[in-house]
Length: 134
Image 1 (cartoon, rainbow, N blue to C red):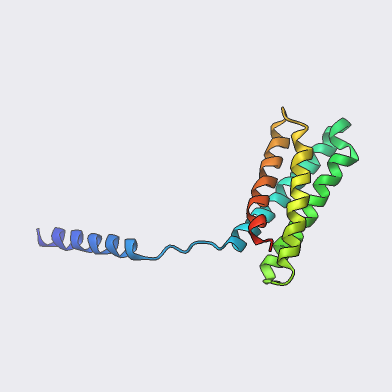
Image 2 (cartoon, rainbow, N blue to C red):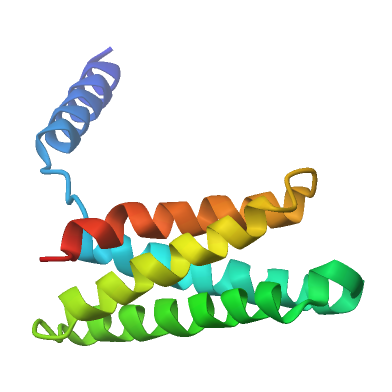
């Protein structure tokens, strides 16, 4: 009986200790960096998808908006990763613009799940990058 009591006491102490641990929330910059990285990856996959489908998917207006978004998101993720405080607001503003344009371009393909997933990823990046624009 005594070993069972000790085991229960240890479990309760462990559980109580884990409840007292502070949660480590990500900063807006860390979230934006993750969103930008994810957006660049999704846009790259979407670009590959578009070039393989050809036709209206491979039109310059579509592929260029994807390329612009990829470039802007990678640049912003790099600046955020390095903590380039002076350039973050400018790069985030550019990323917001590029992602909005890309999402608008993807929305023209409203019945295509791949294109809509890309538009949604762009909107996620916009949401957090917008918070870093001063």
